[in-house]
Image (cartoon, rainbow, N blue to C red; front, side, top):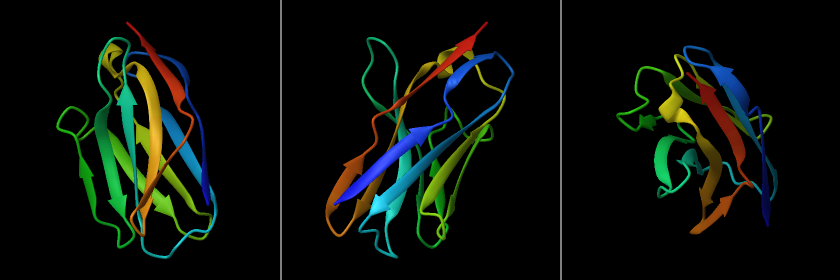
Length: 115
């Protein structure tokens, strides 16, 4: 079993930055995929970014160049550095971890960007 705990959300003005963390505990394999989705009010959950255990990353076009995903394998923690934030980035951000055919989700952390 794997547990994911997110932190780092909050309220920030447009143009500001935030860093989200996703700490994983439990049975973590050396090979897995971690990433982030987000869900704004009244909208479907959408992909934000992903990183595989080898370090390859991929981003949604809407965040490319502004967000950076990284991971610290020793700490079993993934990070999402968000810069140049826009009001349309306002959402609940969920981290996920895929390994061995199973997918795990965190509880979500609210990010609010004011104009």
